[in-house]
Structures are given as structure tokens and as C-alpha cells.
Image (cartoon, rainbow over all chains, first blue to last red; front, side, top):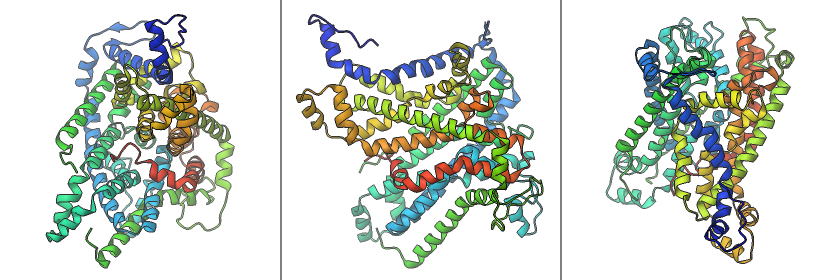
Length: 303
Length: 276
């Protein structure tokens, strides 16, 4: 993308650069970074996924990597874990977010600001910080906050992260209590955008609160819900930090997610080819799920 | 909307207060746990209400780690990333929203489509490229370069700048202002609120970034605070006091930033995400 041509005569090319050169110069840096750090790696990853990769000498193995991973129990387990995690967290979080936003919307402005700020606060802490605190909360002895809470009811301490049957649930529980602040603020902005006249008309028709919710509020907030659903699923499909920090995928692969499996395959076992194949399966799943969501959930309401 | 009954409002407020309490508890416990002295014993039970305050956990955390260096690294990296992202994203956002040039739409959508690709796909070739081809492993450049300007930020700035008046640009052009001059003297001052939001979010995201710095750094001195914290947890998993102190050290700058710039945080989220 050459932009520094300085034409002596009035050529067509000269005019072209005089008119558009600046614009191309303005987008030069992002485009270069995109070519080097995104486009090249994507193509390279695709090639790698068909190779037994080695820095010195890679050998072409066709679909071997893909065959290997489809026969691999750990791979299927990781997909299952990721799907369970996503199905248990994303819809629940959207419902929590919606209810909280709906309540906050009824409050006076001063209280709205207070609750928005309080709910958003945990989002400022990093995944590492949150994981560290929850490691302590899940402590298997009665030191952990959660076991102390159970102790109040006379229940025995639970080995939250250390046994297969509770480990994944623990990560899900932690996610439920995570921050809903950003979603709440988005919902509040959309709620503010719903024309008041719609509710006034509904009042005149003596529509009940539930009918108003079903016929006005929910359909008109669909775009926001769709946005939260799509971004939630994409984030959830890539969950890594909490797994790495808290369980390392264990015990007995109970918390191995796809993202964690890819990390392990690549940077523990240095199987770059196999890991690339796994990452393309992940990309395929993400795109597939996003398309389905857009198709069946996108709003046909105009207002 | 129908005026709600008083009882409903009270119940709603109670629910909100309850949930806010649950949300805040982990962070509260972290801070409280960091100022109680555990004497590094495994039987340490951080209490919800601290008795005698102690900074011993902080002393242990800083004594056992290169935390000052990690903090300096994080500060440097986050600052540079904030500057490059704000500058290049607003420059590109301006070009895509206000300038007409062949290929504009195609290039914009190509950039945007990269947001759909999960990070895991590009990760391995990116690692090979940076470490083995560019030989940049374990350096600031390696941490900064791949996210020097992100597609998401360009999108936000394009959205934001579309709402700025075009007439001012025409006026400046008639006054023979250069295109970069227009960007620098006309557009940037008008876009200040958007730039502030972008800067804050980029800074926080860079400060909290874990995976890429974690992969690309080898030496203790090159770690960011997040990567350093993770390594500390694995090394000292029984010293809860010091771990809580470390977690607080990693989070506190962002918490303070949030309290002082709350308004920007709460308004900023809606840029680009809500139509209208």
C-alpha cells in the first residue's frame, strides 16, 4: 500500500493518490497489523492443521490431525464440558441481568447510579484476581467461605474443585456470581429507548403488567438480548483463565474446556498441528452457534 | 409506564441490595484478607471483620516477588497500548466514517470479521512468528505489537465519529487545512468524550490481559502483574494472606480508576452496542 508517490505531471494515478492517499495512510497501520498478526496467522494455522508441525521441517499429513482428534476421548470430553458450561451459565446470566436491570429501571436516578456502579465494580478486577479470590472461597477445608456458609447449616465441607462431580459446577457457580454490570447497563439503555407511548396505550387497553412485559418490553429488548447471548456464548466457548488458575483442567478432565485443551496440546505437548486442528473445530462451532442465534433470535420488530 | 406499587419497589430494592452484596463479597474478602496477619500458616482463616490490622502480608508479597517490576511493566505496556489504540483507532475510525475511498467498505468489513475468529486459532502461528521468526520473545514489543490497534476499537471509533458533524470538515477543507490537520485540529477535539472512554477501557483491558503476556514472557522480570500473580499463587499456594495481598495489589489500581472515572465507565459500555 504505497502512498508516498509524488507525481510531477497530472497523471490519473497522481490524482488518485491526491484524492485518496490520506485515507489510505490513515488506515495503513491497522491494515499492516491485520495482515501480519491476523491474516497470516489464520492461513498459517490452517496449513499447520494439516501438518505434523516442526519448526525445522514440517510434514504434510492431510486430515490425520482431524482424524486423531475425533477419535480422542479427551477432545469430546472437552467439547461436552464447554457446552455444559455455556448452557448452564449464559442463559442464567441473561435472566439475572435482565431481572436486575428491570428492577434498577424502577428506581430513582440516584439509586440507579448507585446500583449500576456496584454491579459493575467486579468487572474491573482481572480474571486472575477473581480466580484467586474464588480459590480461597472454594477452599476444601472449613477455611473457605463457601464451606463456612455450609457449616452454618451443619453441613460437611465440600471438596469443591478437587473432585470430578463438583469441579465443573464450581466454575459455573463462580460464573453466576460474576459481574452482570455491563449487561445491566446495556439493558437500561435499551429500556430507556422504548417509547413511553406504547405503555400508555397498553394502560388504556387495561393490559396487565405481564402482558405489557410479554408484548412490549421483551420483544423490544430482543436486540440487546441477542447481543448478550452471542457475546456470552463466544466468551464462554473460550473460557480459559479460571480453568488454568483453579483446576488445570482436572480432576480427571472434569473441567478441561476446549480452550484449555488447545493450550495444553500446543504448549505442554508441543503438538502444534493437532492444536491448530482443535482450534479450527472451536472456530467452526463458534461461527455455527452465532449464525443459528442470529437466524432464530434476531428481531423482526421495528419501532 | 404504569406506576408501580410501593411494595414492589421495596422488594425490588431488597433484591438489588442482596445481589449487590453477593457481588461485592469476594472483592471485600480479598481486601480484608490482605490486612490480617496469617503468619503464612495453612490454618489461616481470613475473617470477614478484621481484628488487628497488619501489613505483614504485603511485606511478604513484595519481599518474595518482583512485584514492583511487574507493576512497572504493566503500567508501561498498558500506557503504550492505550496511546497506540486511541491514536490509530481514531485515525482509522475517522477514515472509515468520514472519508470516501475505493475499497473502504471491503477493508472495514474484513477488519471487523477478524473479531469473529477466536484467539486460539491465531495463537500458535502468532507465537511461532513472534518468537521464532521475529525473535522478539520475552520483550515489550512482543507483548504490545499484536494488539497495538484492535478491530473492535476501530469499530467503536467509526460508530462514534459517524455522529460528528461533517460540515466542519468541509469548512476546514475550504480553509486549505490538510487532511491530517483536519483530523488533529477538528476531529480529535470533537471526539474527546469517545476518546476518553476508549482510553479507559483499553487501559483496563491491557492491565488485566493475561494469556498473551503469559505465553510470550519467560523471565521473571518481563512478567506483567497478572502473569506474576498467577505464578505467585502456584508457588505459594498456602500463604493466603500474601496471596490476597498480591491480588489486591493487582486489582486496586483499576478499582481506584473505576471509582474516580465511574461516569465514563458506565456510559462508555453503550457506545456501539445499542442502536439509537
